[in-house]
Length: 175
Image (cartoon, rainbow, N blue to C red):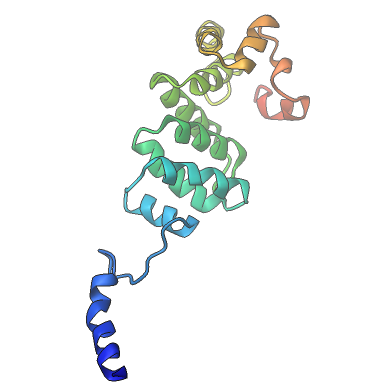
């Protein structure tokens, strides 16, 4: 009897494996989300998991996940890539790359991307200074309901309203 049950289990084992040959694959773990991203299988759950990854200090896998999602068109992942680039999390500090992610999100219609890229343009951070374009993007973000954009517009575009003075070193002119 035991031999017969064992034989049935062994014969059924290949049917229990997923398409990658894994028996009993992980389903809702961060490891599974990273593997999904590496295979280019991104969805809202996979992309949202990048938030938990970066907030738990796992910046390298957050970067992998967000980048795959951003390349697939998820604008929220583009703004998170900007955050990672702007703070050197999971890679080098790269203001140019940060600004490029914000620009892509803004051009895709993301209100947070508009706000962030507007700030980049107002500061000349990672891009040439362009106050007119920066204010236009911030106005558009404010019209979309971004509270910080609304506060910035209400202050006459006083950047100190939205940026802690501890970050002033980062946005100071380089020359």
